[in-house]
Image (tube, rainbow over all chains, first blue to last red):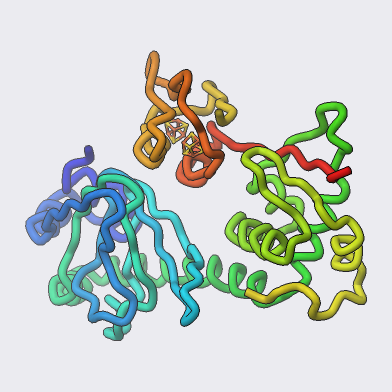
Length: 230
Length: 64
Ligand code: SF4
Ligand code: SF4
């Protein structure tokens, strides 16, 4: 596992700082560990700290009023989460859950304030990082709100389908996402919707097309609202 | 079990820790399948892998 200092050194938040400065900041870093499945941050609660993943993986997600979960990001070692409420002072906009045993390093809100004040270079880094995050979210929101992505996924399924008598090409969700020009999360959600509507069935490593006609209709540009939204 | 590209694997072990079926392990510093494990194709290993070394491709078939 990375030491506090190693983590600060490779974090883009602190790039450009010298070793004395990093040493001083590392004195503000605290440790916290979580079991697999633990909720680390709950949407709507007050934010306490900026977190860095030292080991393990966490997912950032939102839950809709009817209980549907949308993954927004997967955060791996050396990456950070929870910056939005840290910098705007509002509540957590999303929840975060441990996908493995997780060790986090955190810096409390008030200490972040002091760091920004003392080291203006960090503020410049923050702006750059937040702009990158915004770009990722804009792309995700566009795709989640534009229904036609599901049509592109349906098209890919029809194009790559075989009758099952001979082995056909095999596609990962990531590959389907890059073909559809979208994020893997959106493909996963589209497949779930198509399954819920009974057009396909996902049976381990097979996607079985149960209603080819319905998929064809979705692919056609005249497709309007016959697929469950959500 | 998922497809593995050993060349791309850096042995970080993230996929191993997300697999609820304990279907993955490290052998010679790269990921390997644990034989006989019932993989449910949840693709969690693929999702967490940063290098694209492990994946769960789907075969797409039309029901006859
Ligand atoms: S997550 Fe990817 S790189 Fe890490 S051990 Fe697993 S397959 Fe290898
Ligand atoms: S697909 Fe799921 S069950 Fe299979 S090896 Fe990957 S994480 Fe484990």
